[in-house]
Length: 93
Image (cartoon, rainbow, N blue to C red):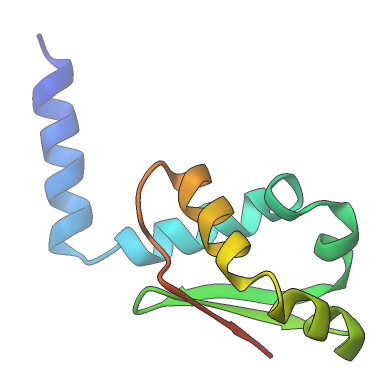
């Protein structure tokens, strides 16, 4: 019976302090290798979410070009991992 009030309190805390986007960014960053594979993870320098856009900094222009062709797949994989829509666009840098 105490589970629902604690969940509600935590949800309210996250909403009040606008932490959802930061928590989503952290989750994706920590799960990036599982989502995209070790090779892409190894070449990813930085990854974060801002206003439903996933920003991915990679160290290889060839990889960046390959990822451009799979943006819709990246969006689908990230949203599937999160079990909800957290990303609507991807920017490769």
